[in-house]
Length: 524
Image (tube, rainbow, N blue to C red; front, side):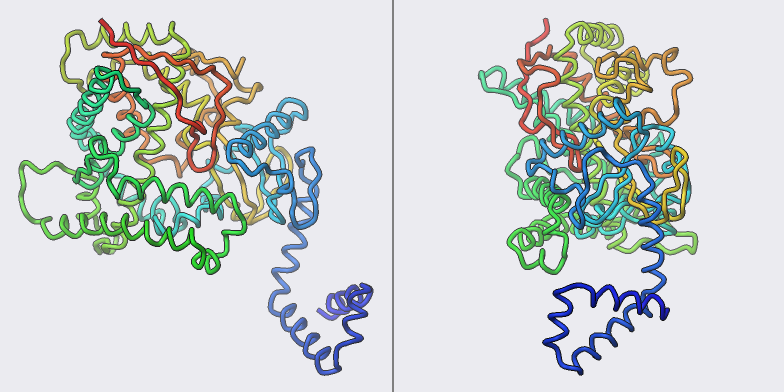
């Protein structure tokens, strides 16, 4: 270590401000500083050498065209507004894909290099692996809300939780949820009908969001919050507010330090909001646990019941805190993502009347008279499924995933060092012209059986892919089909908005910056 320490001191003395500073310091202070520096280097020398090695490896990787500055990286280029920031990132990706023909590129978030992947070949290396399964550091801002559950955990804990939760999405349980989805869809239509009849404007995006929230509350917890009929519910308001706070922290490095954040107004607000959210879910869990041995024939099965009866490999039950982590995760992932997907799908249908006409014809053909929707009906709505998939291609609910490499790996012939932050953006991969012909065109026939055959397995990843794919994918697809079918069997949807001109926020969930305006017309 002596050569490294000597080099360190030599470099320090060469700086003018260092000479001046040392000239003003006492001998004792200088010796104290040298001792502290020596201890730090001795303790962290492996990390220092690994850091130097990683930096050398990163310097050989393709980088976005713009210049990265010391310490701040590319962050000096970042716009402050969420929609402008998302456009900046996607424009950079477009330039890298189209002009530079790069499959990935480094974007510096301050002093932190982010490997920005834009091609399914590179995405597959990370997502297919059973090694690179740790989530990126930005997920830690979800810890106060979701703890370390299925979404945010890694390693052995994630594997155990995945095994325990998988039975929650068994076909028979999903089939039981059809009744809930039909009932809440009927409530949504009643609310919409009343507004249309009275001449009020209908915020269609909000309507499907509240419907999805009521569905996930009842299917996850067996508890209704009546969000559609009580939009001012404190729980509903808190659920939306915590999402906004998490997104704000992810964008602003000044909010990253937990201690400082907890002393700020927004940190204190988060604590208050989490008190509402955790208080509600904890009370529901405790009540359900207390009554778990009671045989209630009329009581519907919920995800919560599966968690309460789950046993680890050692035969231990999950603690109340363990159960709460997963219930809160269900609440977060189970309504916002699906609601965003439905909103974009409805906008695509409104923008393409020929496609909407085909969907109406299919719904009329499958359902005929006004009757209750069944699982068998959903399987027959093949074109609607193609429409849903194509809307998710253009507007994936989660526009970016984050992973950390746990060992060196190869991307497009380059060596990516261990502990690298990797960003996998479905939004960009789904629009890569090398993979998708005329990628910006909305064409549901891309997902016909014939056209889907032979497609790269990681070219379409709205639900992630590989071992950490979305466990609730079938639930989400089923819910979306039910709500869209119930709405479209009764209404024709149009919009004065122009496709391609809607600003988007791409933080946790891909949303329009402002609510999309829709016009509903009753079908004869």
